[in-house]
Structures are given as C-alpha cells and as structure tokens.
Image (cartoon, rainbow, N blue to C red; front, side):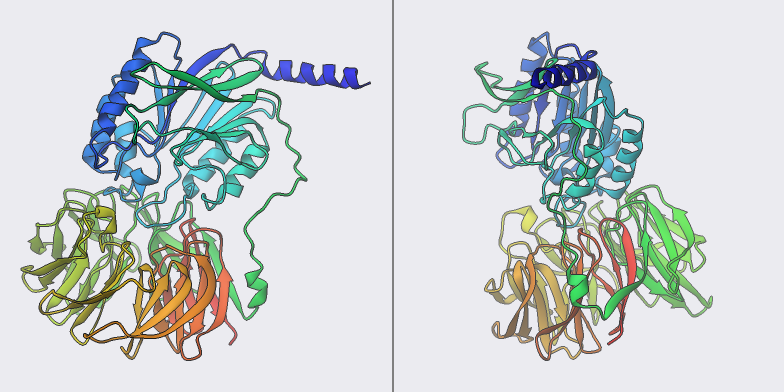
Length: 620
C-alpha cells in the first residue's frame, strides 16, 4: 500500500514538472549602488562580467536594495551597469530604493520599467514585486496596489503550475503584511520564495513555503563580492554561491521541486487584534480601503476627508459615511498631506497638495483643479498655508513660497542638498523645516532668506531631521531625528541649547495644548514628556504604553485632554497625560499609521500605509 501511494505521489510530481527542462539563472541581491565605501559599483561590474563570460545563464533576477538611497543618479548608474548584461534581467526595489527615495519610488519605475514582474520560463511562473517602505520609516510592506496586482496574476495560474515568488523581504513579520502574501501563495503550487535584505545566504521561514535568502553582492570585509547560481532541475532547485573574481563556488543549499498542495486548515502566527476587545468603547464609524498605499495625513474640511494615494489619486470621502465623493488623478504617487484654507475674497475653500509628478496642485472643494505649479522634481513635502502663501519643499532641492490664488512663485530658497518630505512650521516671521541633507533650516517667511541652518553633527544622511515636524514654544525649536536625540534649538540663533538621548525618541514628537510639555514616542514601548525650557532636558514622566518596538514617524497630537498617536503595526492610541494611562487603543490593520487628524477628543481620522482610512469614534 505504501509503495502504491509513493508511486502515485511521484506521478503527481512528474505531471507537475514534466514541462520543466533543467536551466540555470543568476540570483543577485543588495547591490547598494552609491554606498559610502565606493566599492558597490565595482562589485556589480565584476558580477555582470562574470555572468557574461558564462554561456548557461538563462536570465538574472535582482531582489532589491539596488541602490543605497534611491537617488536618481544612483538608479541611473545601476541601470547602466545592468544593461551590459547579455541575458535578460528582472528587477524589483528594496527598502533602500524607496524609503529615502527623492521621487517616492517613481523613478525606479521610470528607469527599470516597473517595480514588479511576472514571466514564465520552462513551465515555471516567476512573480516579483516591491516591498517598501516608501518615504516614511516603517516595516517592510508590499504595496496595496501590488497586492491587488499579484492576486489578479495568480488567478490566471493553474493550481498545479509551479510558482517562484521574489521579494526583497523574507515572508515573515519583518514584512507587515507577510501573511496576506503567504495566504495567496499557499493557494497555488508555490515551490519557492526568494528574498534578499539580510545580506547572507540562508534558508528562511515563510510558514511552510520553501524559502531562501540570497547574500548581498557587496564584498563587505572580504576581497570580493558574490552572488548565487540557481540550478532548476525536474526534482530539485540547488544554490551555489559564486565569487566573480576568483571563480570560487560553494554549493550551500537546495530544495525539493515537488508539487506543493498546502493544507489550508493549518494554522500559523498572524497579527493579534485582541486589543480591540480590550477597549470596546472605541470603534470605526466607517473604514474605506483605497486602491493603493496612503502615506500622509488626511485633511478634514467642509464635511470631506481628503487624501492622496500611491497610485497618484486625490480622493475625497464623505466624512459621515466614508463614501467616495470625488477623485482626481495626478501623474505620480502622492505622499504629501493636503492643506486647506478658506479664501475670503473668492469665498471658496482651497486644497493644496504635492505629487511625485513634480507638481503642486490646488483644488476647489469639489475637486476642480484651480492651478498647478510645476517644479523640477517630485514634490513629496506637505504644504503649509498662511494667509495668501503656500509654503512647500520639493525634491529639486528647492523650498518655495507660492501665491495661493494663482500658484505663482513668490520666492524660492534653492540651497538645499536633499529632498524635503515633511511639513514646515511657522513662528512669527520664521519658517522651519528639515531636509534629507542632514540639516534643519530656518528662513524668513517673507522673502526666503536663510536665517540659519542646524544639524545634529552626524555625517550620516539617514540621521537627518527630515521626517519630523518640529514644534516651537517660547522661542525654542524642538526636533527629533533617527540619531535618537531630542534637540532644543534657539529660534533666533539656531544654536543648540541642549540635547538628550535618554529616551531614544526617534522621529515622533508633539507639543501639549498649553505649551508646557514636549511629548515623544520612543523606540522601546514608552511615551515621554519633558518640560519646555531652554536650559536643560527636564523629564516630567515616562509611561510604558505597551506598543513594543516602534519606529514609525507619526507625530503625537494632544486635544481635549487626550494624547493621540499611531504605531508601526496599525494601532492608534489615546492616552491621558494627566494620569499617564491608556484611555483607549484600536488596531486598524498591521501597517504603519500616519500622523492622525484629531477632530475632537472623541473623533479621530486615521490612515494606514496599507490604504485604510477610517473614522474612529469613542463612546467615552
């Protein structure tokens, strides 16, 4: 009986892979073109030359972190090197290509044609897609539009047809929506998942799907870099590490190529939503699922909730019902939080927002485009409107003041060395903002003159005070950055008054409504409050809030005696500063929550990276 079952199993395997002829492909990851040590380009050129010297490579796959910071010139250089390959290559971005991207990831698509791929070779379907994060720090995240695309692709594939999936991240909880991807793949004959990100060759977990991580192409501390040769046969897939200069090879792992019929009843770890039962007094009045990621704070104006998404759409929802009222298409992803103001002379509300297509848009309340202002690069920063001025920074290294009525430029400051991705703040005649060039800038809001620029002393661009929205009280500017310091800076002088890293606050900060406290969300489960003062850091209290490891740059907002903020894993918290206790918490999904829009102590508009926008309300 046992031999009969085994023979039947072999017949299924043979049937599933009878059309698979042996072939070899090259697997490259984490090339990091533009990395500071300067060796990444030589490492990639060596690998390309080595592949070109062989005659049995069918194609090449690259699983992300192609560049160090996603800069336009880095992407162009990577493309130039890879285009010298004499076989086809298929490529997807990683977090380094999108997280600090000056184009919001758009340039990757423009340079390489797409951030996902699907093709069939020798009867095997290869599917790869991007994984973010985009512009803001968060966990890895397969974009909502890519999830939808992948679902449609898999529908066209038979249940027994073999599938190999590629992503930059392993399919584990480092990717916040790993479970959604796995559930789709387990419905098919997924024989293998490939990833990079960890820079090492090793098997990785993906529930019960066979999965392998490939090494970085970088040499690191060795004399040369390396990549993998993958041999696909009718019964196995084997991996050989290859050194392009010495030609040294090492076979290190393999997986069986067999029909995978996954047990749908098998249970694996999934996100825990039990916190929603702990605080039954809060619930969503409605939840809207956008067709793409939402990575900004929605505006609430005249009964509408307005926001942009990664597909480049500006969407307006009815605040009461959550139903979509109108949408406008821009030419690129939108990471800018809309600003609005009533224009007294015309007696109409105007909405202003930036797009990665390089334009600043001004809309009427019904979605009519009133004007656009074209810049020389993506506009990822959020506008601030004061009187008849719109203040906004762009990726063309320019900060502008535009006329709210016409969109004409009033003045420009063109001395930045990196993109602006956050929102400026104003105090008196001074406007302040950070950029991904290590600096915080203070300009005269009337003419754009530089008053001062400040940095935290770090030579690392990634430690710039760029994602934080600074707060100001009594002529002191407070800012946090990824160097994990809270800094107090003189508004008039631009001089450092004090700095502290005691609380490991990263990029999230807030000011109490009475101006007496600076709030910070730390990386280790804690909310802190410090007294606003110019002399020294004075901690008032520290509260263990239970949110765990945390790095999402969502600001803290106080209103009606509550302090509100979101986390990297989809939870919105409301705490009571007076008692340092949690008033309520609600988990929307498992992705980053943007800075929330607090309507009142009982109503909050929240948006997540996965594209969910909801109105949370409490019965308290």
